[in-house]
Image (cartoon, rainbow, N blue to C red; front, top):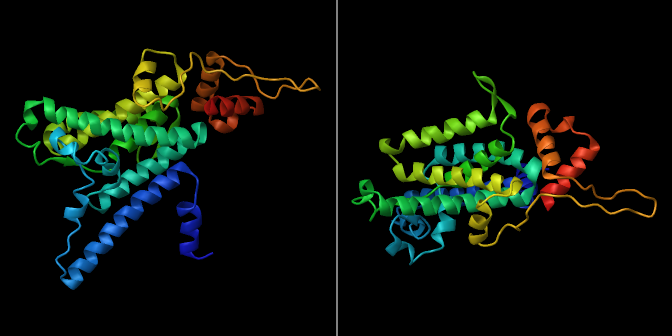
Length: 288
């Protein structure tokens, strides 16, 4: 299998949520970059800036109403190689962790809805705070960071005590990684790219509320229901069971408390520490 076939098989044709999102982001970035290269070499005068402007997210509501699709498309555009590199690395590491425990559906929901929510917070901030009154007419947002931060915080909220090994720092719990990321975005608002940092914070907030919605019965149920009824509304997370003729239980009936104990065990000892029954419970719970 050559390199192109491997990329095609593992990313372009993959049904893995993280790989698909990365593939789309990278493909869009490469297409724009290649067009810019040929435009430069041929002195054609063709620029991708006027084209991509239709897909970036404007700060003003008056501009947004003419391109509402930008609330989705902006999260697939990046301003330079390092911008997309760090976003995709974050998504690969944390997205795969979230995928391992909750599956494709939750990764898509966290990324896309987190990006949309971050974009809405960005526009809201630019139209409320006096600091942006002069800049909002020309300001725009682009990048996957809001969706990626949603995935990062979702993983950290689900598995706060799960440890990852970082260079020079050793083993660090996910909750501290997420907290540091959020604090850095917050204190960086006055120092440039304020809109980007605000969008990141919006995505992070969504990631936190998203997991809290899935595993608790709170007032946030109505909030998520209003965002498009994407999530099914349940009073408790349960796994029902039925009995075969031989008396075997096909599905296991568990309470929210039992699921929480399993998640806590994962955060302390890892997924492999679970028994077969516990894995079945968690798998079924994540699909409901």
